[in-house]
Length: 98
Image 1: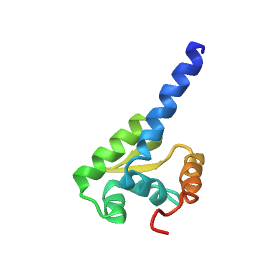
Image 2: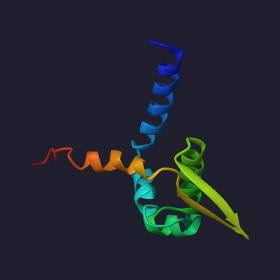
Image 3: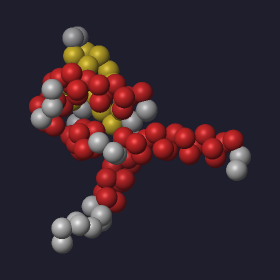
């Protein structure tokens, strides 16, 4: 395979790794409708500010989220709403208990 496809596969794997954590998926859903501050997101996903900040930093580094500063607040939003299609596809994962 060509170098371009290999680079794409690496980027895709990095984004897919984000789906390996329930809190990061919850962040995606929380940001579906509107941008939010770190404290709003932490409250929505029931996580500490410290862990939420770490999740957000990772997600922004991977290009999944965008941020903007307004005064002392940083607002986060989805970089691409199409990423939630991956979450929607996972609805089809069978429940092993059934």
